[in-house]
Amino acid sequence: MNQTVHESLDDADLFDLLLTLDPSWEGGQTNRTENITKIDYFYFYEKEQLTMLWILFVSIVFGNCSVLITLIFSKGRGSRFRYFIKHLAIADLSVGLVSVLTDIIWRFTVEWKAGNIVCKIVKYSQVVVTYSSTYVLVALTIDRYDAIRHPMNFTKSWKRAKILVASAWLLSFFFSTPIIVLYEEKYIEGNLQCWIDLLEMWHWQIYMSLISLTVFFIPACIIATCYAIIIYTIWSKTNILSQNKMNRHPVCEVSDSQTEDTDCRRVSSRGLIPKAKIKTIKMTLIIVFVFIFCWSPYMIFDLLQVFGYIERTQSNIALATFIQSLAPLNSAANPIIYCVFSTFVCRVQRKSVPLRWLTKWCFQSTHLGTGRKVSDTVTISNVTRASSNKYANLPKFEKKLTRLNRKMMCSSDVCSQH
Image 1 (cartoon, one colour):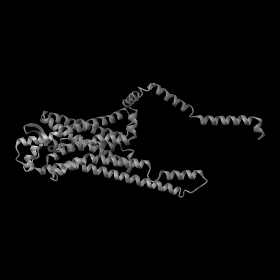
Image 2: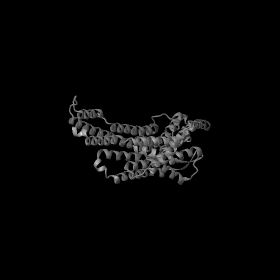
Image 3: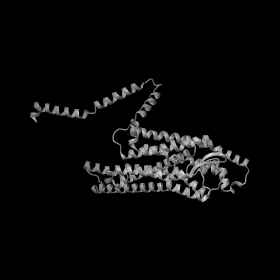
């Protein structure tokens, strides 16, 4: 939510505004020349911030567009997981196109030139897409929790999934409504800006506390709680399953029976933690860690600053602008997480037409200097596959040949002699 949650921390004109709010800051009654020098020092970080924003924009748009294209090219009836992933990708893509892109444009124009109505619409849209990205992730977490805790009821929960996604979007629109009132066009140091004007510090404290609770702390608690219960449930059920198998084969001793020895090895090789549990735990830890990592620096720094625990120096203002650029990082990380841990997304992406074309082009470029064409490689692979299929039924052929030989032997004098 760039330039949305705490506008007083991300514009160069804030330096003069903070002097107005707190004359004791940086000497208070400094002359205009000194203020301009400090603002110029602040703008020294503008290139670094723009670089970070451009990297985030490209990552968000490319990652989430690839996920959406994957879902479009997929065949068959969509599952609930695909439904949540689609809305999560739409929300994250909106963060890049609405929030990050407008922030980049504003860095170039400096002054707001779109009018008061557009100011309110843009700010409202920025907050909506930020809320939606977080709340759809929470809805997906609740759906995964429901799948593990209530598997019998989960099979008919399409309606519940749609309600969760609709609730996520409705809450995003609802919690963003105060922005329409708070933001308006104002002249700040002679420049027209789309600005939020809270003159009292305790107003900022209430504002930032509510934003932090609704955007970060409450969703983080819900996600962490749901996945903790998921881990506990899988752990408990797997332990019960392992105990039942061990009760079925209480002692694995040396035996002449090959079947008992095979069963014992199967039980011991699986252990108490199967691969499915390990994969779920890894995905859980990464999801929670990435969400907290992306939002905690931004929220904690702003809270500490607005409550007066961080000294108001020019270097801290510059640090705040850099930390603010990390806020959309969660929208760039979400498609990576779900592509890594979702076999469906990875499988469909490998089969999608754009990715196959890109892979073929890269493969052809790699073999340009070898003298071998891609068609030759494909032909060789087809011949190899055909040869494999040819000899795949060789054991059946040998069995038929053995029966035929036995019949021939039985029809001869040898069989009659025995």
